[in-house]
Image 1 (cartoon, rainbow, N blue to C red):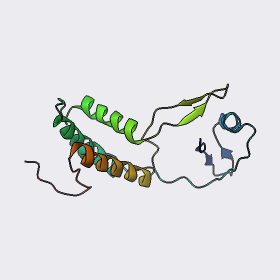
Image 2: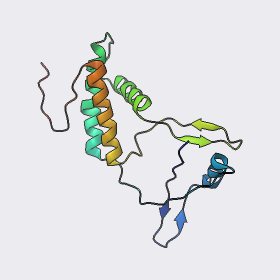
Image 3: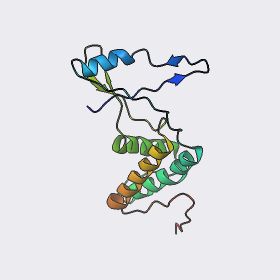
Image 4: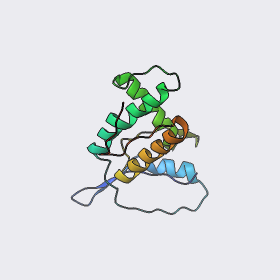
Length: 149
């Protein structure tokens, strides 16, 4: 394991707010080990434009690519879009590792909601690279015009 990440906040009065379980998780993960703690400002979350491009372009393109393999999905069907979203999270993102009180490592499902703009951009790049190699499709970049027919 490489490390744990926790989100917190320093409020206007200077009071530090961190998850209550942080100390227990650190102790469970690193019992008997030397640790190093680094605190940095958290990057801005991904943008509405990135999320819109992902939902309106990337996921439908993947559906078309999978349809070429014999699947039967519609790019305007919310359930099918959600299925593609889950596929992408499972394939290209790691779930968060947490530790139970007994020290057992368990993994929470991956999520895109806390990705920074740069992380979300890399996520989109991974998807596009994979789609080109395995589905033989080209996902247009943001603002790029393509002809469908």
